[in-house]
Image 1 (tube, rainbow, N blue to C red):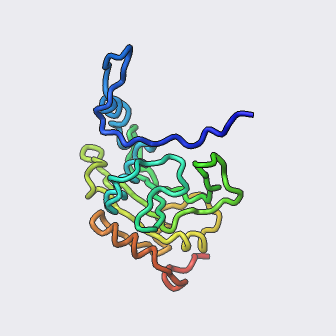
Image 2: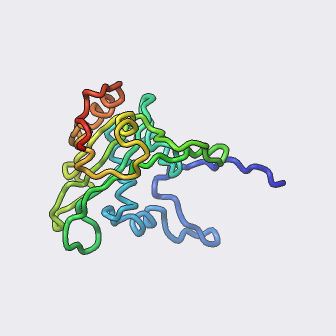
Image 3: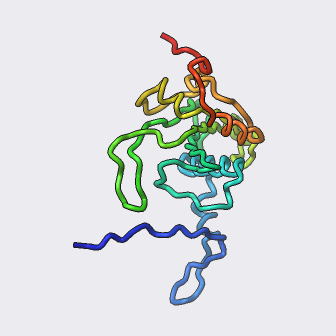
Length: 208
């Protein structure tokens, strides 16, 4: 029987580390990042960027590097945070704006130490942050301009109570749950505020 290998360590890199061939430097990780991740509008990269922006607002961007399979995206002072992103514009040519849609599906928690999934699907964070790249001009859109983003912050308990096991939610339905709507400077306070308990009176009633 093969021995359990355990979790590998994530190394925080600075970009100067080399790619080597026969002990000779060929290129650097920074060059790889430039080649692979210059398109910040593409969904996969924009999602990671949104997590980084929230980490930046919380001041946890200098800590442990992002872990792809974690049960939640960020941890700040005991608050577990899930980050979701959407945008009106994509990298490809569009006939019309994309309708913002966010994933909220409960998932089975992944234990990276044991390499196993939990038995019951749930939303593992305390707070959800929906990050919308709201800019609509393809000539001037820049995901690194934090003023082009808007953030909608909700306690997970609100999603659980109002949306159950629903897998996706549109922007209009996020707004019906009365999130805190903030720009980047107000994001940290909104997250800490959403971590406080809420009552049924804090969000709008469901439409029939």
